[in-house]
Image 1 (cartoon, rainbow, N blue to C red):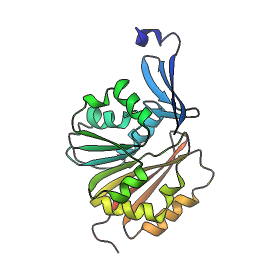
Image 2: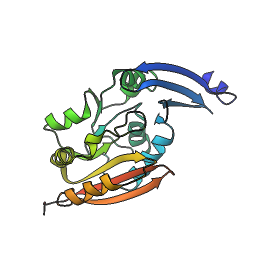
Image 3: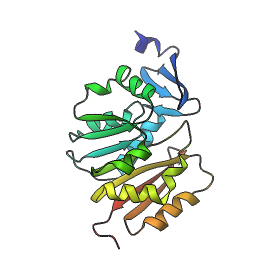
Image 4: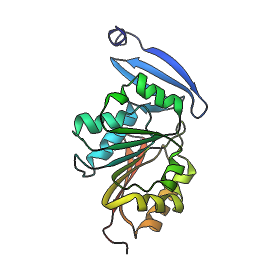
Length: 217
């Protein structure tokens, strides 16, 4: 019934998070979205941005995936439903409210081989010994990417987690006035990765794609 009614007017429910402030689930035109105060968190424009990023990289259905910043899990469903991905996905999310919303409102637990890790993604990359073939970095607090995501230390850890020829998709920000911090990542990490910078994705977002080199220069 909600899905039908949403074609006539949006239906909304709100949740409060100490990490993200007020989060809102909106039924609009038959589709359920998760939004923060200033931006889409899952299943709307963000899903389109990450879907575009996936279309620009190559991976196999059984590749092991790390998702830093799960949100409502929209990109997990894209991987499973559109790309027929069957490998394990480790999804790291710091916000317990977002995890609960992903489970209860978007049915993430029903998907197979999804390991949801309640942790700070920045701490997780410091401490895990696992390695991955595809890493998606989608860490936002409302519309801002944490400064740590641009640090040398963070990217050195990402390099260690990346298998040879691993693909990285970094959602580096929206409505950026400068790409200086992203250019610094490229210049300081070129011994580990080959980079492609994609700007104005869906009119707002900047994506940094990286391919792990076989041997560091």
